[in-house]
Image (cartoon, one colour):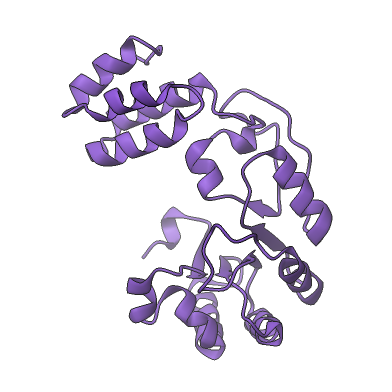
Length: 236
């Protein structure tokens, strides 16, 4: 169904949300390594070996279970593995376990992407250096260019607050907010979602009072008018 529109798919075995795990999805699959391996093989059989299939995982309390999981999905033909260095039960306020990610990297023969606690360039370099995943230094470049890359590291919460992180910016540039609003107008999103992203991106850009004023907007036109006084929003 999706093959004509993408280069590959990712099997998310890392989501800790209770609704997902209750339905046997997300991190619940960390205890179903044979099932995950069967899914990898099934996709490869239908879509071809050249179609990329990756798996995102968390780690187990007993890391031997994690290395067994890695070896099983590798044998099934997975192309790369993303490892979030926390167990399902751990909160994001607890430090990510870099030793566990390093063990996954040392166990795997396919590329490994490190995930967890990536908020700025120092985090990227610290995680790359410690775990051994492949990575490159970042320096600012125009948004949308492909000059800078950082293979081997994934960010989630960090990209919510700074979507330009992997373009080489340690804090969100104003241009990112302006581009986001341009996309949100051309490809409409629900207003609460737009405000959520703006609130995350502007933490270091606007005062708390200003962000509360922004969140008071009751429709997209009011929001655009408020932002127009502070940013150069695209037209046309």
